[in-house]
Length: 157
Length: 157
Image (cartoon, rainbow over all chains, first blue to last red; front, side):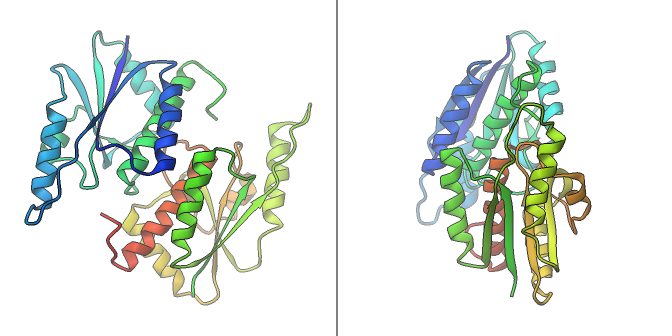
């Protein structure tokens, strides 16, 4: 049975996006096991470069990964599915035994090149640059939508 | 000076998306005049087909249009900008005198073929099918982002 995991940096600070996240996470969990992991953001100190912050956050994400995870970092230049293609892709992965599809969403600075390079699939939700918090909401909504497509339910048009 | 207008079907029913909409609308209006028009959704009656509902809603949108509007219907198969391209496109339009860039977002059934055909530009926020309410939030966030890009402000990365 398919297992999903999402690893994000920091908790969601926008109250309305936090609420949306809970809403879709609850709906999605009717269909599939989804683990949600928030790693601590790097502290911003004087003299600390963006590169150092990114390296710290990506290391914290890395520590949460398990061998055999199917890594799916999110990036605007990644693979753009339409909703039906996304559903089909998930369906294909669910045929593989013991797989955990692990979505990675960075903080405001994104993800390190190393994590992007290690992705089995880089997923783009849009060519537009989304805030990392908006990306979380959209990912959850689309995963939920994918399961309604696979179950031929009413939600998706 | 550039003027924007958005015409949508129905008010936003999801509380958290409604909150997000107000949040970004307020921010966007620091930069540009944005008119927000909600037309009434068609009543769902027994025996009324999707096609009839769509025609009614698109007619109501049509009644709100003014001659000379630069029409931008939203559809997942339209033109996908990245955030910098979207900003540049808006900047280009702002050079045209007296133009009102009018974004159209349908209800759950979308927009009529007629309205799509009359678009000067069909805008795609994502290849993924978004709920019409999510599309509103994403459009506002991206328009706000576009103005921060044009003003070289801190928000966009």
